[in-house]
Length: 187
Image (cartoon, rainbow, N blue to C red; front, top):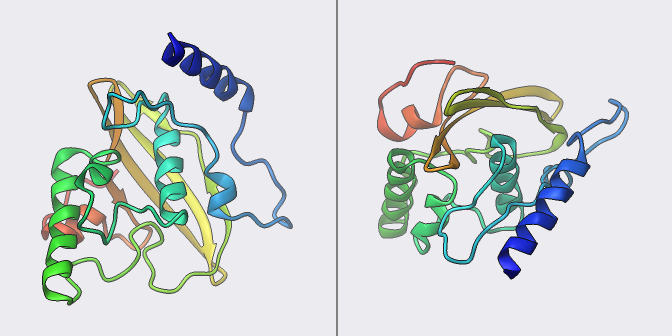
């Protein structure tokens, strides 16, 4: 009963929260400030139950900024599974395990959420998703050291849960390709 009440309260909050970012270009924002949509999580589930694809992307950036990122860690596979479809989660996990065992850089040479090694992030916005059946695209824009960046997160809905299947970067590269050596279809 408590879980149902918690879910109802959080769903009400989500519906009342409106837009994620509505600010002028003179204002700056951080990914931490943008990543505030709550994720409803039942204690018996290992994956978040997110109502929207945007909420999954926001939760990923929030976890990253809270130093609880699923990337570059080989201790908690469930953390990777919370955000990514199985094939992508396997690639991320394998990369982290290689780094943990060898101490050398494997395939991800940059922070995958910013596609950079150094960051000075400004004007961070997670845009509303474009949803088609059980697939979605979420555009994330920001500037890094004054250079505008646009990333497209691809998500699949599996068993009622939105999970990230790939990230396409503005330079034409994609996370799946970086980790596997194979390209997926460009959105």
